[in-house]
Length: 440
Image (cartoon, rainbow, N blue to C red; front, side, top):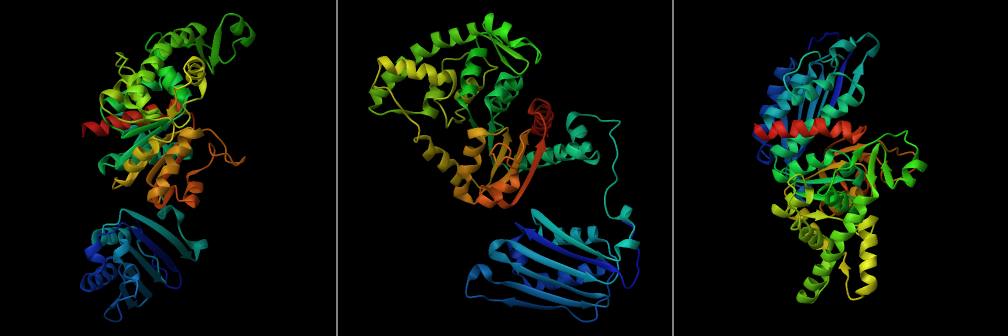
């Protein structure tokens, strides 16, 4: 970065650093060395030796190292919280300096997982903005989907958000986070079903949270596929012909008739299992048992059961599945589902994880169940939202990631992004980036 040295102007930048290297934060000698190195790196003249003191607070988590050095242009200060793995560094200068070099020096000494920056430039009217940010540019050549998505960062708008989503998911994978994949049933209506099945086959996600429409539609597709139609179809004519429309996807009534022939015998088996165990089964257990009946390797349920990856469905009585449950229970009053039983397994999964992450497509109960359970651990550490919903009506489906921070569902220091767009376009790009990361 080219820096204009104009005395009387300058940068004021504060770096808030999280998840740092703990030993370095409590080492007074290390902090002093950092202040000296930082001053040299950004070409500032020290007017005195740094003053560094370890402050021991009555609350251990509030203890830390405070450091300060006077430079000819102003000063640099630092305070650390070793128990919280946090450091806060302020650089006040009357001349411009290379803040990228400053940030790199911070990373070298304290290895923060996340840095938040607050910048204030004196004399902005005379500053050359070209030196302070990245240029917008298109992508004309690429070697792979992942390199394309990465390069889209410079395009702007939602392309930039998509690129950031890919970067965050890569970190989820590298740090071996417990990854929750959340999606609404219309995603399974579409061709995303096979992509989800691939992720489950290769154990690339730790758990799925979805609506019951996903369960029934995945099962129906093991019989016959859904059909490509049109948004502009005559819905009255479709109704007369026994065809149901999901956007531009057609689902003939025959698929639902077949579903009934599969579910009724299955519910009877679940009733027998309930009697054998002398207790009602959980939603998760019923879905797991349903996966045992499937042979289709393009099925989400098939791979979830084969790899024992839990599928949680907080609203199992919704949809055609729920209607068949109701019908079955008319003749089998003793049959029931313990819808609260899943919470223990889900809570254990959240609390036993070093870090949790969410890939959340769409909204509804699946989205809320995913972020809601993470309140137990001060929120998700990573979050990628993909949605077309709006936040203006206050709905959960349209709520941005930042709203969940206020509830403690997303951690304050979480790396997160909201990509506004159709998941059938966005997710395949993210999927192929994930797939390529798997090979590295």
